[in-house]
Length: 456
Image (cartoon, rainbow, N blue to C red):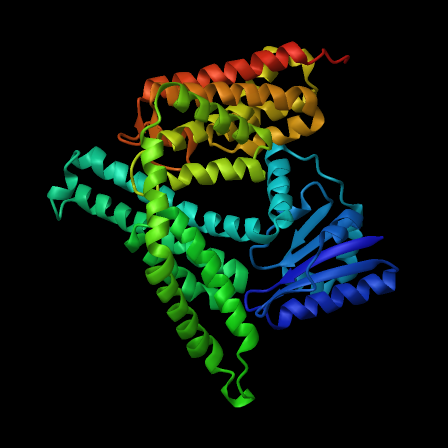
């Protein structure tokens, strides 16, 4: 039999490796193969790969720290303190092989799909999504706190310094102001590891100060990462001076290059492009706005969290980078909520056209949809792509078009239904909700019409 294991203790030193050695010796004596990933003080070693996961019969987690279990979703698994592996490794292996394969819930399937999608990212897309994933919490926190400041202190809250409402508003502005440096910093980090952080963060701050916005921060992150990577590769110091590389040589030189390039070469042109795009988006009205809403809706539902969905989402977040509510972001979030909501409604309307497990999973799809987790639709789409994907794309396209037509705006990039009732987060709230309901009903009706009854 083939087993996988993860060992980790709080210090990441002795017990982590003692447990790994005990499991390896026990597996050998019992005639089984085992691969043990150690999560020690120097990071993860002997990392479990996708190929390992496909061939494994059971998983043992012997850890006193938090270990991400999403990659093991649907596999027989036991989780114990690290000392148990040291004391009775043979007993653990026997228990793991006797464990039953759990019945995957919809939320677990979504977590597994997200983990697989994250592992599959490559190249510039991987670096870009790393930056976006770190940026989103700053944007969400900043946007909601700004809205709460307005809710408690009125539209001119910033004119009353020292009040609780103004403090909330100012805190939100501070969080919002960090999003471009964080975006650029972690794009650069994804490219060059820790040496990329300084030029990336500085480049993002310069993009913000120069008015180059989201696009400027994106370019700064890529530039900062590759500059740091090239300097790290080609600058060689004597062994006695190697300690200067990460704390002096790389940050100083890469940041100098970043500052010169962004200020003297790229800042002005990128600002012009950014201003032109903002003017174009601001001028969208009537049929042009509706067409853009349709395209965004189709993109959000097409691969439900994949590259096309992420491209539309990144476009939406870019439009709120200036701190203003955005019609684009409103259309993106509404359209992204429709796929799981439409499927959930269809499982209620026509239970005879879904399996019992799908009907049960439909209950979880309500919560995922309302939370703007589009990936909640993936298990259903994987089971019946030719009927499900066109249905949810149609519903999302309708919602995107109506959202743009109604002129709904959104000040935050995430949160789903749970943020819509905070004052100043959504413009034209009632029409916005109508757009979501109509798209959900369209998807559900199409699914009910296209799917065939299941013989029980």
